[in-house]
Amino acid sequence: MRLFYTADNAKIGDVIPYYNDEKKQFDMFYLKNWNSDYQGSDIVYGWHRLTTSDLLNFKEKPSGIHGGTGSIVNVDGVYHMFYCTFEDNPQRQYARHAISTDFENWTDIPEHKFTADGDIYSSTDWRDPHVFWNDEENKWWMILSARENTKTERNGCVALCTSDDLVSWDYRQPFYAPRIHQSAHECPDLFKMGDWYYLVYSSYTDGFNTYYRMSRSLNGPWLRPDIDTFDGRAFYAAKTGSDGNDRYIFGWNPTRRENNWKIDPPTDLGSDYKTWDWGGAMVVHKLVQKSDGTLGVTVPDNVASVVQSPESFELKPLSGDWNTTGDSASVISEGGYSSLIGSEIPNLCCIEATIKYSGNPKRFGIALQVDEQFSDGYYLNFEPWFNRIEFRSGLRMHEAGGMMFPYAIEMERPISLLPDTPYKLKIFIEESVMVMYINDEIAFGARLYNHKGRKFGFFVSDGTAEFNSIRLLTE
Image 1: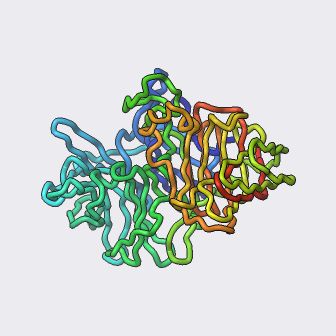
Image 2 (image 1 turned 135 degrees about the vertical axis):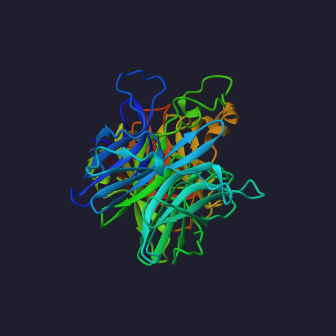
Image 3 (image 1 turned 30 degrees about the horizontal axis):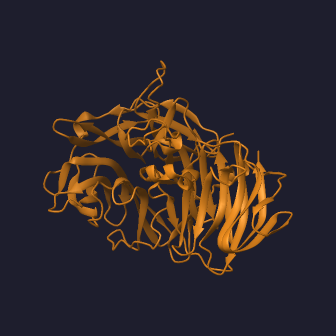
């Protein structure tokens, strides 16, 4: 059983969710990125189809469509696929249209392809079309990843076109253009939940992440919530899909195999310090709508069900005056650092704990794949001073750590941390993929490459902390 689907010899790229009501399953597609060292005879580029009824077991096959991200709508039994293609010299991007009556055999309609108008929008960025029916206007709307023609380079936007027939499209002013990002707003997605509309997009400038905005109306204004992301740097190009009961957001946790950007330290420090790749393992979060309309995420029920068998563990203090009783540990660490080590981490597992701090510690948290010296490993630092959780590698504890900042940038999540308040953690690990959920509303993913088969632990620096209801769960 897999927690995070990964294709053989390849990486999961952008996911295009579609739910088949008749078959009661997600019948979706993704962009396949083959591993650079794979030379198999089964290499087929383009959209690949994934079907699943439980978000755990997937069946896959090629679609015959070679292009970039898009969307699918069903009109009177005919499926309309909108996707994008690219040209160089000069650089141009196009929205494309294909149709099918069986969801398997797709016919592209070349005469329906179109690019940006060159007036409102630049033709260099015109991709990821997302199409939906607007009841208020009685028209089809298409939002796209685009760039405005403006004086500033901060011209990334979500473009808007409208149509009566899914064939001829009229250009309109941008759907959303905050003048923040120096890149197009990738993989735009739009949905309604309750009284709120939500716009989702991804960007790799001024913050590499998937973002969302919220509004009471399709006409805006689009509000930026205090925490406007679903996860961290290791979750990108996410789009949403609903089974009629719950809505999920599908993104990818990137690998670090190929080091395409070549920002290298002088010596080989392992895969943890290679640059992020495009594509990796698929991560699915379940969306949670809070009372104020803002969104959180938690683990899908079926994914959590995979790891429900408790494993025994031990807790051994390394430094500090710890009090340990069964599944709990606490320490008062005034003027120093206290650490405690647990048991070995299985390849597929979930580590649960409820943490609470008092006073004003510098940091506290959980260590993963840490050695007996509590040095090399991975640290999830809760830092009340900054109201954040930071992912930090053990290399940062050594002189070589100064060489790895290009690799660790943006590995943090905002969170409001308050003393004497419990925070419930669920940390899912499958091989190198790690996703932590806090209070079933905040997610934080990462990769753990260099160290395996080691232990988990807890720590606090200059303060008081409790770690309760600790559990180690496996299949």
